[in-house]
Length: 188
Image (spheres, rainbow, N blue to C red):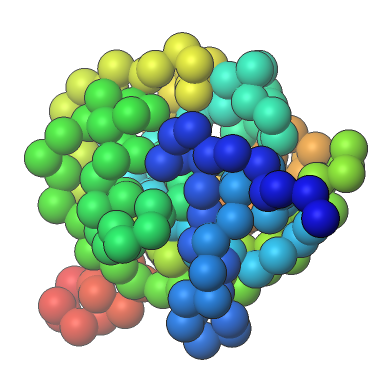
């Protein structure tokens, strides 16, 4: 019987879950992406004062979806870490953003074959926030950032899906739906 791969960094472990987000154990991140095992993820969408979304183009060195445009940031909660804390950690790690007020607005399961033997099968928690400060992209994580009209992004994804991550459209749609509900509730 072979020993499981040794994990040397907390970011190399994902929380395996069932369809109801009940933890079922942990696995090395790369192995979970090779096996297509359902695991917990978090995706952040930031809006500016004009209602635009902050997009990032993933660094070319990322092991999957490298160089593709995506939502503001994403990642995986560590074992014992809340979704909100993971979102704050990833915002700081990827974009140098601290102090952004965030709200979890949705969750959904998705499955995508990324090619190269990698599969995304995630229960993704969508977290939104408002931001109009500076970003300091970490070049190990992010190649570039830009603000864009969310509906234009969704149209662009439909026209050129190969330029965007497999999850980008679904995450942005969930964030927009939540903002529309908030606007109606607030009488805007």
